[in-house]
Length: 104
Image 1 (cartoon, helix red, strand yellow):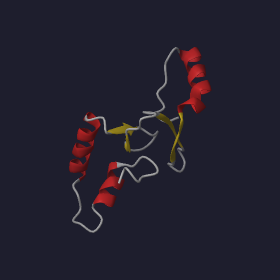
Image 2 (cartoon, rainbow, N blue to C red):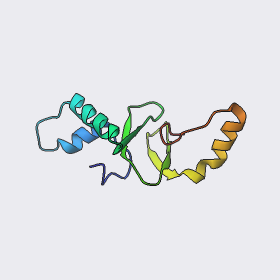
Image 3 (tube, rainbow, N blue to C red):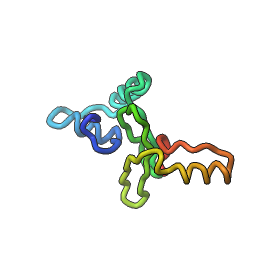
Image 4 (cartoon, rainbow, N blue to C red):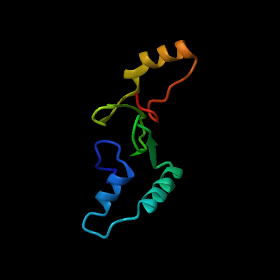
């Protein structure tokens, strides 16, 4: 399901897709499996502002993410598109940003 997903999915969404037509899956089982996939570097999670973790397949080329706090939409964008913001944040605070893990 993550192979066909056009955006990162929550564990609940994964459970709904995988469990379609079957008895309900235990959410704890889904999280355990996602943790194992993450330990194997096959899946990564990200934290949108006000919601649950979202999971995506690991990509060869890394992407940054942007998230809408109003509608919850999450989009992947090329990392170079946020270089100006990354530099401005580093100059203002001294901190390096990771928009792949925490969307802007």
